[in-house]
Amino acid sequence: MKPRVLFVARDRYDLPLSPSRARKFDALSELLDVRMLAVGTGSGDDRFTLLPMLPRLDGPAYWSLLPALLALEARRFRPAAVVAHRPFEGAVAVTARVSAPVVVELHGDWRTFARLYGSPLRRVIVGSGSRATVVEELVRAGLATWDRALPTDEVARAMDDASVVVLPSRSEGMGRVVVEALLRGRPVVGSNLGGIRDPVRDGMNALLVEPAPQAIAAGLTRALSDRALLEGLAAAAPASAGPWVATPEEYARRTAELVERVAA
Figure (cartoon, rainbow, N blue to C red):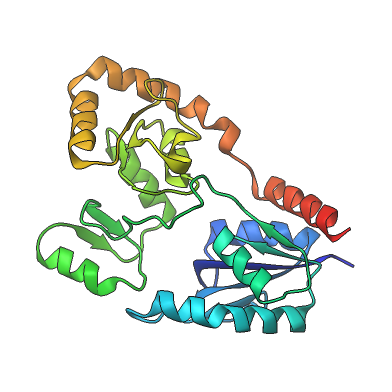
């Protein structure tokens, strides 16, 4: 019998899953009996229990309902372990008195939420979520363009069209977009904090700056005005991303090994 594992995250999942996410959960399901408690829409996959996204009240509603829902899901599913996407969900699992051991994933700067998602500093916005009214105001003001959905190949094409990828966060967990940029051969101008610092080296494949408008502007000016520097950063980018890439099968194997250890 496969070990039962309950995953919990505030990540958004829309069913049916996208091909990339389907590969991840299919790989996990080969080794584990998986349940995911998250937010999103859709149906047809009994591995998922999805909470609806509520305009303006999404955050308070999620955190107020999560303890009871997590305790209920744990009683029904009886997992061998609970895997929390962040320490916040891990703390809820502990306070909800879930009897299974709790595994917490750490992604770079785990202490605070990223604060710049939806900010006007992001001129091109892709995706949908609870802050649609804010994005609509930015679009009306001419401060951003918005694609509610963009296929993976078009995201890659947007990176290919750029000279550099900018990540001006004041707080950042695992910088997945940084790894994606490096794999496309694009250097990064990013804030010198949190998970952004893990896959990059200042002056080798990125320029790290303080998360302030003047510092970000100076970093962009330096990168875009020095062609030799930019080409050198770009040339080093793909190889440096290698240690941060894992196949769905590798991720599933590592997760299964960890669950077996804590369940024992």
